[in-house]
Image (tube, rainbow, N blue to C red; front, side, top):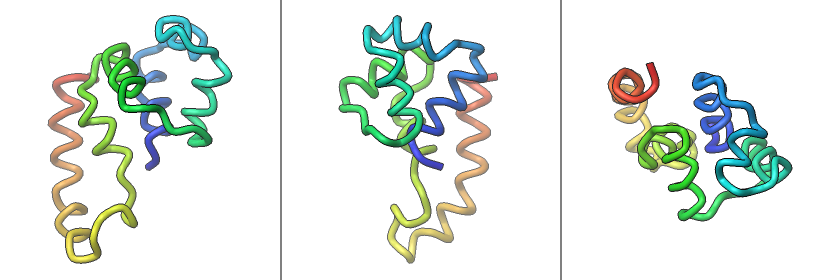
Length: 96
């Protein structure tokens, strides 16, 4: 899953419209749409603002945004084993 998809998924789970989140972040809805569509990569400052607005830690967005090719080949198996548990634990605290 890419970073933009993660942001969109959490925004929808929080029942926040794209327009409302963009307004809260003081950015255009078009720019947020480009981020969610993985056409633009937010700066670290913007990523921090997004994570704050969505009520999740920035490291969660980054973790969930990782894709298999982003990790060294020898670490992919460990990631695949750990990812469901880590995701479940973090979502239990911050999303559900």
